[in-house]
Length: 210
Image (cartoon, rainbow, N blue to C red; front, side):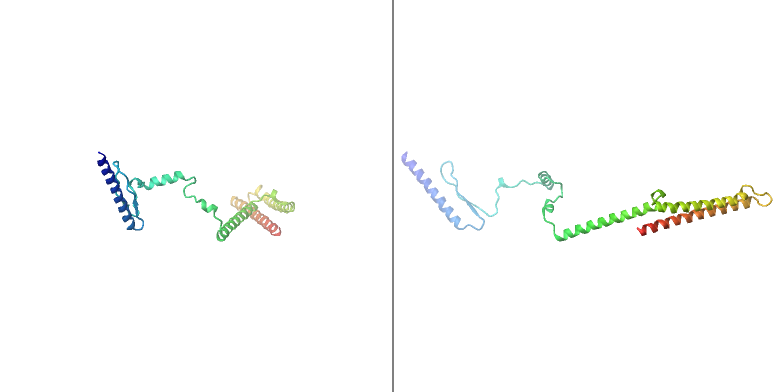
């Protein structure tokens, strides 16, 4: 009985020595990137052969599970704390001279556009300016011109009253009355137009003097 146990122990030791020798020989012929898994022990005490692993080999348990692009995108979206397309590095990077120059040009263009818009608005408002918005001197001129226009209109009305209000049935017929009224209307419109043009020219002169 004792002799059988000794024989089994010696055979185990002999098998282990052989595995170690084989492992040493394999390690001498290893290529770049290859490695050797040391021999593991069996339940009966004997050693398994060493395993050579080639370069780039990935065990089956360590192989990554395939994921579609949609799943990867959703996972990336969940991990991000910023909106899609936002680049935080662009805000942290120092601005170059060219970028600063472009920003200054854009700002100047915006300011110039705002000034031109303001000038156009002022011109429109000045064109539609009422008498109450004019200075006192301009109001005096305007009132004088209005008075002169009124007096001229009154003169026309007075001069035409004897003919229009109380025409002679022997001298003036209906057609002559209509032509006379039309003539008076034309004169009134011409005077009004002339007065409007004078007022606008006066406003322009005031602006130029300012």
